[in-house]
Image 1 (tube, rainbow, N blue to C red):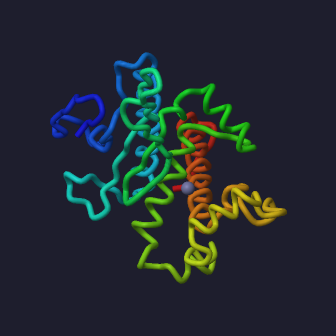
Image 2 (cartoon, helix red, strand yellow):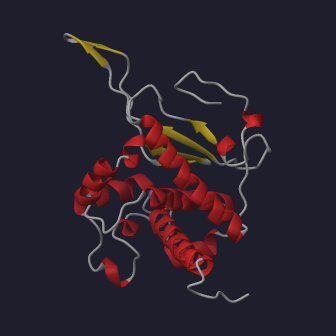
Length: 224
Ligand SMILES: [Zn+2]
C-alpha cells in the first residue's frame, strides 16, 4: 500500500525490494521525487548487503514472522488561515518499531542533514547510515529478543534497567558518558544498550560495505 499520495498500487507488480516500501512522500511537492529516489537507492544498498550476508528478512506478503517495511514521510504542518490552523501537525521520527523503519524525508536533503550533523556533534551522518543503524534495531528484535538476551546483556549491558525512556531523558539532560571513546563506537551508543547494539551493527555493515566495494573493484582479494 502506498499511503499519503493516494497512489495505491498492486504490490505484486513490484520487485522484492520495492514492495518493502509502504509509504512514499507526496510527489506533488517540489524536490520530493529526488529525495524519494535517494532514499530508495540507500534502501537497495542496505538490502543488497543483507542478502550478501545471508541475513533473514521478509515482507508481509510472504507472511514473514516480523515483516520488514519502510515508511518515507515528512513532517506535516497545519495550513494556517489567519489565526486558524487547518489540519493536524504531524512530526515524523526516524526510527524502528516492530519491523517498520521510518525515515524522515528531511534526512534526504543534504543541507538539512548537515545541519543536524553539526547540531548533534556527529563525525558523520549519511542516509545509508540511518538504514544500517535502524536495521540493527530490527535484528535485535528478530534475532535477540526472547532468544539470546543473556549473552546479549553480557556484551551490551542491561536493556531493561534503565528503561529506554529513562535513558533517553538522561542522555538529553547530561549528554554522552565521559570517555565514551574508550569503550563505545559513538557518543550516541552510550545512550542505551539498544543504541549501542544498533550503532555497533551499523558500523559493522559500514565496514562490510567498504570491503565489498574494495573486492569488487579488485583493490582487495577477500578470503573464501
Ligand atoms: Zn537507534
